[in-house]
Amino acid sequence: MEKALISIVKCDVIDEFKTVHKAVESSIDFISSMDTFINRGDSVLIKPNVLLDMDYKTGAVTNPHVVRSLVRLARESGAGKVSITESSVIGRDTPKAFDKSGYTKLAHEENIKLINLKKSSVLRMAIPNGNIFRRITLPEVIFKSDA
Image (cartoon, rainbow, N blue to C red; front, side, top):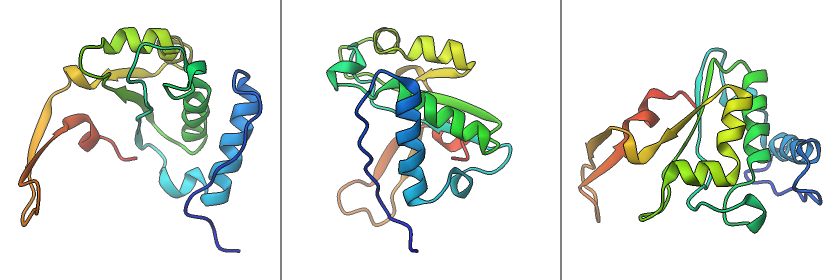
């Protein structure tokens, strides 16, 4: 059977890790497997949406149970290092957004690093023959990750 390019799995209970984890696993299984994306020893960077200092139950930020599930699945697939990276919207404090949405607690419990993109070094890259952009600035951390 051919695998899907995109999968959507309904999860009726968003505040219970076991239920969310089961939905995340199912969603990934429809597409492929984590082993397709992650090799043993890889440095994995997860970029959820944590733009605002709001509780995940508002739907404004990614549910940390989804990210915890991805962290554990990445480790099961052999990831050597897993980090979470984000930059809150202009005028908002990224560490406060991490705190309010549950990511600081998640990082502590899973022993992973939270990376504030507002404080990260950047690389300027040329885009040869770019139609709209000729140069782009990207966080250096993404180039240090394998997946």
